Image (cartoon, rainbow, N blue to C red; front, side, top):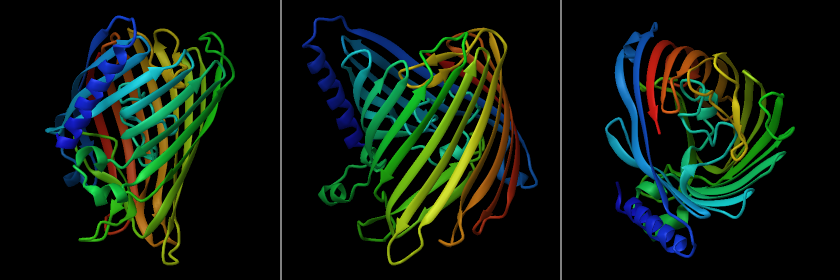
Length: 387
């Protein structure tokens, strides 16, 4: 953990307790933890790329704090032997509909953006989504929601702001992103009536990569995603876009849910404008997910995040997912690859804390510069503990 990250952590704790001391309320502290244990077998013409085995891709421990209208969540994670900060934020709820948050948290771009890994129905986030959702980032957010609408506006700086001790010139060059998500739903959620939800997310970014040796000039972006498995960590798509001016992204979403059946779909488009009369780089992706509860009750819904929640305890769920991603653009002469991926998962929810997932995924990647086409068949099992 860097000195800057530790300083931010301590500052967050001090700020939280100083502010909360002004209210007449009781402090509530809840421990939090997450543990993922994966096993995988692979079949592929390129078998040498994918090694069978087991892994603990993630383990976290932390605490959630509540004091009147204030709340905070701080956790530390271990992933592949590396320790780092994960959630680290402070939130103030003005009332039941308005809230503000600052710190390190999942940025709400698209439907998949605010969904933590433990809530995602698919075994892994679709490649189509992983390429364009920012994930955990250091920034600030304001949200509003009622029965019919959800909206969020957020801002984050580049990832290195949390891991590096930045000097004055680096702060001058720090990349940033402004995001917003608007969602409309047909009514307050009623599990016995159909739910329709549609929305759109927009984002604008300045370059966040330094691609010039020995000169601190942020002039590029990087998009990448791994195959949908974490036992064998292999990059599926990757593109570095240099001499960039800025990036614009949009993502429409559509959700339908009725009792024990749900449908989720999302499309992503990205364009990066470039300097010196170079052609812009355009890329896109999309995914479709169909969910059904085979055993157990109906789906539920979180209106504060505009997402579906997993089934209750003793429920068996089947999830089908198809996604396509394109990270190649001939006019820009950048070939980051294309991917087709199909997944089927059986998820059993023992209770609110223990889940087992059995998964098969087929992924084919091609059109990536200097990398041969590759096909992966993955058979995976995950045991997950969450509280």
